[in-house]
Picture 1 (cartoon, rainbow, N blue to C red):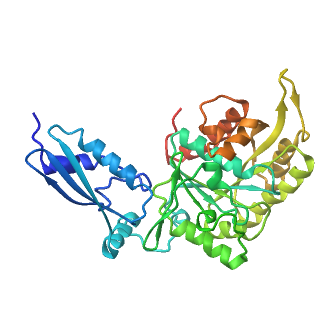
Picture 2 (cartoon, rainbow, N blue to C red):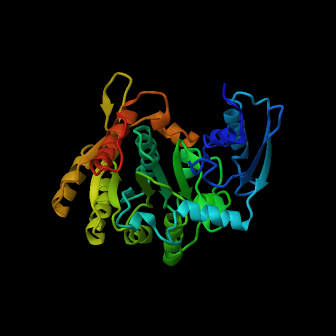
Picture 3 (cartoon, one colour):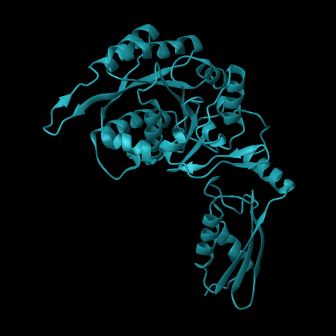
Length: 372
């Protein structure tokens, strides 16, 4: 028979993982005090980073769940408090692991996170939808994934990912919300609903720098950056801030779209980034009788792959051809990407095909071992 003790209680509390930071609450200084009464009543004082923490109920429920697993616990009382300035500073130092502030971890030589910037030559080709679905697919393959919504003027990732909680601040550090197991940050989380962003280049650059340096990303395997369409300020800033970032180009089968997308790919030559592949979206519409209707033409992805391979003097493969599907659009509207849905479809299969290729590059360099 195990004798209930404060030590055993603390061991149990180590099994409670903060849902945003993904570390035990005992490691984060969130457990202020533990007491045990003779009748088996356990009282725990939990410190949150802010009084309006949206996940307080989740943390409370998890604490009770873990403590009631212990033999001899008859009741659990939880007192919720808020960290003071000194405690938040200590938490920030813990999360940074002693690293100096205002450092972009992904730009450091010893950082093994793969950074894929998802780009397109023009809007309306499904770039953000592909970003969201690739992120979910990579997470389903066993990787730790984050998304930066760098489409400052046309942000849509929060809705597509179904983000329901705002970012939290620990002094100058931002704790990103988590959706579908993926850490997500977007300028849309800091704006009033449907407010336009009217910023010019220098402000955009500083906003991106803050997303990369001041957000607590933890140890990611993959960071996806949803770029705005075209070859403007944001794409240039990403190349400057994270020189090792690589490009995935999204296009449609339409010849005009592929020609415009070529410019986005060629920009990588000037910024010395690698283009790792092309995804052709809206490739065809499969009709009820099994035939395929090429609504936007054919061959755009193959043409772009061949053109960029020649111009960049490097292999730029066509990673996938994503068909038009109503469920793909509905997933973006509902906040549950089709890659997260419990359903099979040609679009989902093709998205996972592209994700496996991107994940294999991570696995090849020893960063992670994706699940089969």
